[in-house]
Amino acid sequence: MKKILQYLAPYLSLPGFCQWSHRWWPWTAGFCLLLWIAGLVQSLFLSPVDYQQGEAVRMMYVHVPAAIWSLSVYSIMGIASLASLIWRTKLMDVLAQASAPIGLSFTVIALATGSIWGKPMWGTWWVWDARLTSELILLFFYMGYIALQKAAEDHRQASRLSAILAVIGLLDVPIVHYSVRWWNTLHQTSSFENISRPQIAASMLWPLLMMMAAFGLYYVTLLFLSMRTQIVTQHADRLWVKRLVQEQRC
Amino acid sequence: MYRAFWKIVKRDLQLQKRRGADALTAVMFFVLACSLFPLALGPSPEDLAWVAGSIIWVALLLAVILSLDPLLRVDFEDGTLEQWLLSSYPLSLLLAARVLSHGIWVGIPLWCMATVVAVLLQLPDKAIGTLMLSLALGIPCLSLIGLMGVSLTLGLRQGGLLLALLLLPLYIPVLIFGAGAVNQSLEGLPIQGHLALLAALLLLAIPLAPWVAARSLRFSIQ
Image (cartoon, rainbow over all chains, first blue to last red; front, top):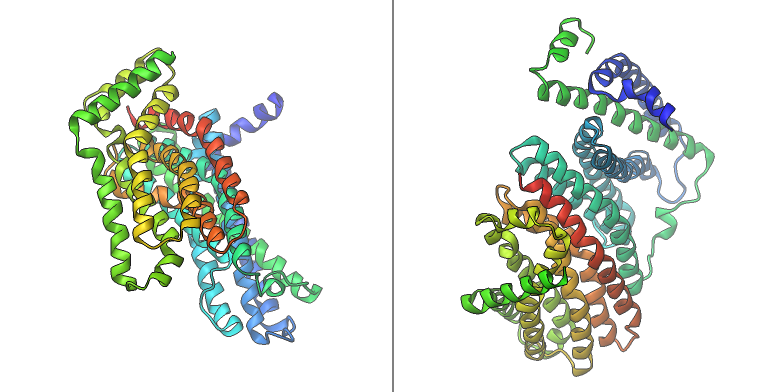
């Protein structure tokens, strides 16, 4: 463990991160773009039409990746916050803070595409279904996190407090998820379980997986860019920042 | 150590007694908020009976959030809290004492008033017992979770509004199980499941919330 950490330490320091993310981000961005184009062509034109939903099924290729990544980003945020509280690593702090707006936008995309998809399929924009409700509550968690982060004047204090909130959220999101599920199933049985959890054919699965990977790479690319911006603006007066910027290595 | 705990509880209660009406503000807000619903929904007793439990739970949630704002603020402003941080006693214990006294001077009046409001809102007798039980388990939960929120927002701009924004999502499980128990008993279904889950939440919050709050207070007071 110690050896692994020793090996990783240069990459996890702020100057180290600035340098390797500077080298890597064109690659993640390029792969993201490639996958995005391939996935969109596959999902919008080449993949088969659903026998029940018709063309509307194509909404899935945006909706499902956004929904999955919205939750994943929250978990990453929570784990990074926990790591930053335990080991006081600045990089994890920056990672958690930079993740929040991206995760928030994924959540908004998932909710918006979900209701646009729901209107023709279920005949309504919104249902108080367990999944929809927990996604909405996830949105509230993201908004609370960002609001807390913006409210503190000192950015060190802001990062500490919002890290604690993210960790509380990490514990609370599963509780909310299950409580919402039990709340809903106690009242009515879900009438669209087969739509929200379809048995998926391979011709639809591949474009979906490509889109998921594209969303993931998009997240990583944005993360690299916004983390580096944050690090450089927060440490603009440091010598290593000036040097890296002058040598165009960050 | 436990002497310090009880000393704080006693001191808080004495201060509240001298200040008098302060503790009642939240209770009055609760009664007022509840009495707005019949005005909006119409006075029909059958309609009210179905929603009474939910109304009481939601109004209670808001009343608790309002009452939380001064929980640590006075002590923060006059520097007592800094002495707590420096003292040799564990901060989480002192915070737990504060939550206990908050439970006594806000929780118990709210709990008693909820009975009266339930009768006013035509909640059937069989559900009133369940409401009382669920509130008895739920109000301490709300105070404990509230303590975490207060310690995060203390000393920030717009502390009060931010507090509500942070706490409402955290209160959702308590609301679901609490109001769920009342609705179950209205339909004549068993309520043990809901109450057991509420109790589980409470048991989770009792050790964790003061500890988390102590951690975050060290960051928010600098």
